[in-house]
Image (tube, rainbow, N blue to C red; front, top):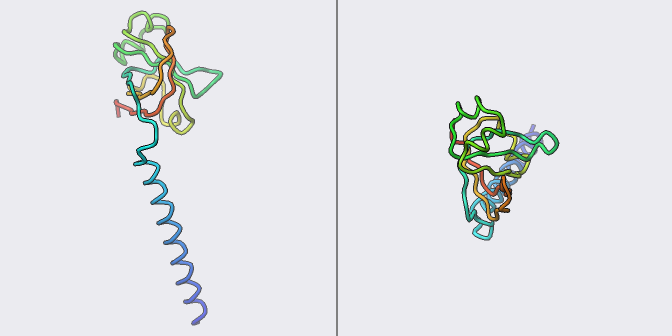
Length: 127
């Protein structure tokens, strides 16, 4: 019986050590000042999701969710103030759906129309 309790204690210590290590690694990457910080933001509604590249969405500023649902993609781009194709990671994209209101932080913006950017941060506004 003494051997089983010793094994249980060793396993508990190992699990606590692994959990603590993972926690501190996550905190480091979250608070790391060397991570690129956004230089600009766009706030708008996701009106289109690229069917070929699922990690690219079209965000249009200056329209409401109700307006976005009533308009086609081309009409929404025309009606809105600004339109941007946003490329993001799968992790960022997994929580977003069509017609979500989002605030996207980016470091560089390609000035085409619609413009193009890669997301550094994404915040869902209509939760």
